[in-house]
Structures are given as structure tokens and as C-alpha cells.
Amino acid sequence: MYSIPSSNSEPSRPFLTWQRILDWAQERYRCRTFNKDEKIPVRPGLLYLVQRGSVRLVGISQVSATSSSASRLGRTTPEEAFLGFVGAGQPFEIVAQSPFTLQSYAHVDQTTVLWMYWHDLDNWPHFRREVLDAFRYQHQRKLLWLSTLGQRRTIDRLLGFLTLLIEEYGEPCENGSALPWALTHAQIGSAIGSTRVTVTRLMGKLRQRGLIRIQGDNQICLPSDVLLRG
Amino acid sequence: MYSIPSSNSEPSRPFLTWQRILDWAQERYRCRTFNKDEKIPVRPGLLYLVQRGSVRLVGISQVSATSSSASRLGRTTPEEAFLGFVGAGQPFEIVAQSPFTLQSYAHVDQTTVLWMYWHDLDNWPHFRREVLDAFRYQHQRKLLWLSTLGQRRTIDRLLGFLTLLIEEYGEPCENGSALPWALTHAQIGSAIGSTRVTVTRLMGKLRQRGLIRIQGDNQICLPSDVLLRG
Image (cartoon, rainbow over all chains, first blue to last red; front, side, top):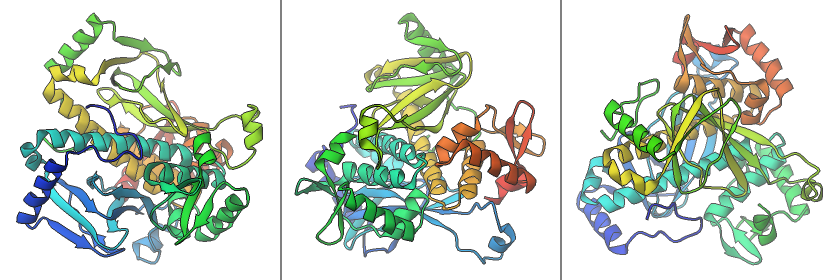
């Protein structure tokens, strides 16, 4: 009961509790559906649950070592970093803000999110524990993510990043596992401290070496032997 | 009660509970003191609490896009990434392992750590909630950390990284806030995907621009106006 769910496992949440929470949120108009790339307004102190679809977390930097006068005059564009997905059944919250701003977007059409205050969870103590365990799990995944971003070579960060994402969210495909959602090369670059152009070049290298495959609707697929090598 | 502690605040933990937990751990020999850079053995499923000193979390990569045959023969050194500190009064756990290995080290001499099973927390339900809230807070900090590591320019990642560390762990110093523990340039490089040599060069630039100061025993200090700019 205290263990963190392993990757790829179905949410262990009892269907009945989830249905009751959904009904509760709908009765209170605390449930909304978003289109792809629509911004999901979030406030600190509230807990959000993804009912359907996928949420993309993004960090926006306000710190720059250079051209601080230019940025004060709004002349530079702040950099946006892709920070990960929150899939169906998973919670998210946005509290910390400085010196970066965290934001959330619907990553696919028909993404439905419901929200509540933390004290609303007093109604469902068992569910509260599941939510907190889910945050423990997300925290551990972010530590792994930081591990790969510490690697010096961009191609290693790229492969590590894709491996972690597919390990967590991948769905079975021919001889491997594929990310169910598209990610642009610019979004990948924003996550690993690189550019769209470099990501495109390095993705080509990884494909040549047989470390990734692209299939169907631009889905990134990792062959099983690459996943198992980890 | 549900809020995440703000940075720099004293642990809100009632002294009596903490003392009871300490006594409980000592009676069971679940308490040990480590020297600087000594490895702290950790097992999944256990919860660790830092009683004194500071713990350094490290991630070791086992994924590389190149020279996979060389690494299989053990010819390449795996890269180690600095993932952050866990200060006194704070919990940590290490669960996720693949495709990176997470490890913990005492960052300073006389670092004392105690441990327990999660179900041992049944004795202290209020304390359990504090531990889980601490993990929520750590998770949010890691999202900010990922935001800066997504920045393209190494100098921006370096300043963002130092700002986040000092915002969280800094202690007041003349006209600013300083990191109470030393970090080598190699450790900083391992966190931001760069090298010792580059970090040394960029730290020089940041000093010239007045964005950081070095004081006393090689402590990194951020002037208040830099911290407030965020």
C-alpha cells in the first residue's frame, strides 16, 4: 500500500472512488476540458487531477546572466522548458514560482482536468495517500531526469531523456515501446538545454544507430533492447 | 497545515515529536553518523531522515548513445550528476533506479541519518503528513531546477542553478545570501551538463559582472538584488 507504483502499471485507484470524485467535481463545476496547447489556469494551493488526455508542464525562466537591461525592457524572449507530462489519473500542482514560472498546457485535444482544495481530500483519506504517493513517484522520476541532464554530451542527454519518457509513458509497439504523444524537436530541445536544429541532427544519428525509431504519426519508439540496456 | 514550507523557513516540526523519533531510532540502532563524502547505504522502501549535517544526492548514468561496446567492457567511466542537497530535518528516499542509479553521500562531516519503514510512520500520523509535504516541496523545487537546465546557454544554467540552491539553502551574508556548504566546480558542472573547466571560466564571468561573490571558505554568495530579480 505504501509502495510507489512501478512504471507502466495501470492506476491502482479503485474505480468507485474515482467515479465519486468525478461526480463531486462536476457537481461543483470544478472540471473543465481543454484543447491541444490551451493553457490550463492553475493556482497555488489547489490540487489538479487529469481525468483524460495529457497535461504538459512548462517552466519559464526569468533569470539570465546576460542582457539583463534588455530583458527588463522586454526585448528578449523568455525561454520555455518542457518539464514533463501528467497523464490520465495523475495529480499535479504548481506552487513554487520564483525565479521560474511553472505553467501547464493541454498536450492533446479533449484533455479534462478537475481540481480541489487539499482539505477537500479529507473526504477521501485513502485517495489522499494515493495522491501523495503519486507525488513521491513523480519526484523520483524527476531525480532520474536531472541525472540525464547532468550528462555532458547533448546526444547522451537526448537519449536519456527519451528513454525516461518512454519508460514512464510508453505504449507497446513492434519490438519496443513508443511515446503515445508527439513532441516537437523544439520541445525536446527546450527540455535538454539544446536547440531544435541540434535535436533534429542528433535524432537522425540515433535513428542511424538503431537506438530509436520513428513510426506512424511521428511517434518516437525505443527498441526493447535499448530499454532493457538501462 | 497543508501548505508547503516556504524557502529558508525553519522546520515547523514540533520539537517533541522529532525528539521522540530520534529516541525511537536510536533504541533500534537505526541511526548512523557519516564522514564527509562517505557513501550512505540506502534501500528502496525505507525512509531516511537527515538529523544533522547535509546529504548530497547523486545520479549515475548507465545510458550512453555512443561506445556502448566500450562501456560494456567497463572502459568508460559512468558520469555522476549532482542532484541536490537534503538538509537537516528533511527526508529522502531512493526508489527509482533504472536507467540511472541514485546514490547518497554525506556532504559534510558529522552527517547523521536515521531510517525507518514507511509503516513505522503509523506511530506519528501528523509527522507522516509533514514528510509527504516535504516531498511535495522537493518535487516542486526539482521542477524549477529542470526549468533552468532547459536553458540553452551554459552561463544561464549556471546562474539559474546557483540561484535555486541559494534560494533554498542560503544563509544570510553581507548584502546577500550564501550557500553554507562548498561545492566543487566539477560537482557544479555535473549538475548542469558541463565541465569543471567551463564552470571555472563562467564563474569568473559571473563574478566580473557582480552576479555572484566568493567569500570566506570558498562559499558562493548571491547579492540580494540578484536574488530579488527572480
